[in-house]
Length: 406
Image 1: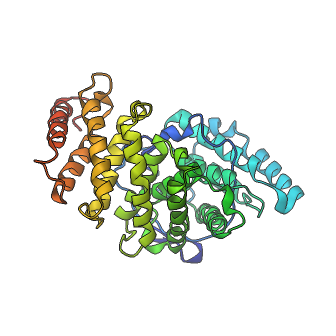
Image 2 (image 1 turned 180 degrees about the horizontal axis):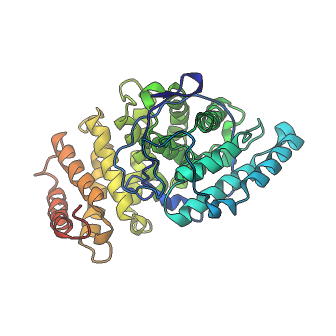
Image 3 (image 1 turned 90 degrees about the horizontal axis):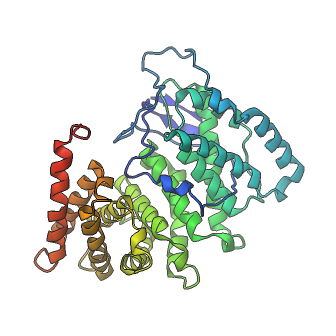
C-alpha cells in the first residue's frame, strides 16, 4: 500500500470505471443542474479496491508497469486547454481575493465532466496523468458560493478526477488528495457557518451526498477517512431541514430523492453506522414522505426511471437491513408499498423492461427478500408477490440472453 500525504493510504486499484453502473447517476449532467461551481483546498484520504466494475477504461495500467512508463497523449483532452484555463483561473482568483465566488472554476470543472460524459466513461489513467498535475493551484476562497462548490465537487467526482489508478505517480496522488481535501474542508465550513447556511439548497445537498457515496464506491475507505465522515455528518442536518421545510421540500425532485437515499444507503453499506450516526436515521425518515408523495403523484410517477426505482427500493431495504426497524417506522412500509406499482409497471412494460439491467433485477429481488425478512408480510402485501412474479421473467430473459449472460 502506498502512502500519500497527511497519513493518506492508497491501495492499488485498476482503473476500471462504472460510469453507467446501476448505482451511478449520469442524469445529473442534464438541464436543471447547476451551471457554475466552487472549490477549496485540503488533505487526507485512503483507497481500497473497487467493487462491481462494469466498464474498464481503454488505458488500464498493468501492475507490472514501471513508474515512468510512457503515456499515449489524449488529444481530445488537450482541446480543453487545461493549462491556459488554469493559469487564467489562478489570476482571476488572485485579482478578486476573498470576494471571488468560484463561478468560473465550477464552469471549468463542468467542462471536464462534459468531456467524460461524451465518452461515457470517467477519465482513464493517461488522462488523469495529464490533467491532475495542472490542478495543483485549483483552490477556493472564502467567497465561493454554495452552488459553485457543489457543482465543482460533483462534476470532478463524476468525471473520475478522484478515482485511483495503478502506477499513479506520487505527485499526482498528492495533488489529487489535496484537491479533494480542499473541497471537503469547504463543504464542512459552509455547512457549519450559520450566516452562510441560507444558500444551502436541496439539489446541492443531494449532489454532494451522491459525490460522497461515489467516492466511497470508487475506493475511498470510509473507516479511515475522518474528513469524509465529518462532511457527511455536516450535511445530514441540512437534509432533514430541507426535507421538512414547506418552502423547499418540492425542490427534492424524483432523481434528487433517489440519488440522496441511494447515497445514504451506499455510505451505510460501506461503514457509516446507523446506530452511531443518529442524524442519519432522522435524515432517512425525513426523506421517506417524499418517496411516497412522488410515487403516488400522477404528475411525477412517470418520471421514475427503472434505475431510480431500483435504487430507491434497494436503498430502503439496505437501511432496514442495517438496523432501521420497519415495524417501528410506518412510513417505511408506506414508501415501499407506494414504490411497488412502479416496479411492476416497469417490469411489464415492453418499452421499459429492457432498461432493467441484470444488477437492477438482482438488487430489486434482493430488496424484496430483505424487506420480507424484516417484517413486510407477504400475505398482507399482495402487490409484493405480483412484483416478484413480474421480475422473474426478466431473470429468465437475461440469463438466456447471449449478450447479457456474462
